[in-house]
Length: 357
Image (cartoon, rainbow, N blue to C red; front, side, top):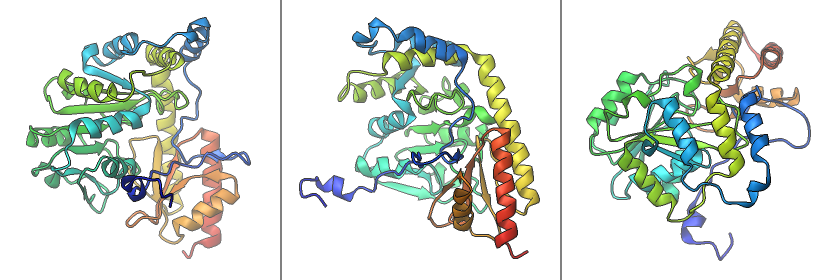
């Protein structure tokens, strides 16, 4: 350990992102990237923005993008914050809304960046166990707490918490901020955005990376009461006065203007998800009900690590965590129909080879 590291840095266990291979070509079903290209309008906007104005700083307030987001979601620009990907936005939420002396809550099986953020900022937290079906139990989130973070749909399970459940959590916690992370909402879940004007303690975080195929641009945004958005701006402007670059701003606006493309590609992915889930179930896999662009699967006879390694040998990457409760599960990004057929064919061979049924 480097002797010049701070005590906090030495104590951290950083987030580990999904593999981005450089040595060979894989079918990449491990990082929940969209298998389809960005909207033609987004690409055209990026090309137009790649001009001599790149010598100038971008708009630090992202005014035009926030106006387009407001028109898209029925909100005022003052109710919207824009950041460099939803990870940055979530990190700012942890700084802006949570205090060390009050324990925050999030599920025990969820986006693994949440405990990393909490440790980084010295926050106390409690991981609430999901039930045996990986559903979010409401009761623990109705108790006294210092804030709540819920991924909806959940990552990595894909399970959706109903809007009724979100509303119950909000009403039980009028003095705490509830952050709903909706990175995957466009693939079949119902957004909590419609609750923003009724609940001043609600922050909804979304991203352009998944449904709008812009993971390479890093654009995320938060929506909520104007006072909450002001807190995010206060924290952000305390360490970085700049914001998204000009190409990201342009591409995000272009993608938002192409609603037909969003609907078409999201529906295509949802249909492929259901096709793949049905085929995996026929092979004996347990498949959670997913409202996201991935499947969470387990086989009763073949360990997940065996499947992970076997798929990799066949040129297919999926995601696995060596963690209690989910050690025998794989998260599989929904790819194209052709990619998912290759995945199902490989799974069938692995089950035949290693299964005991």
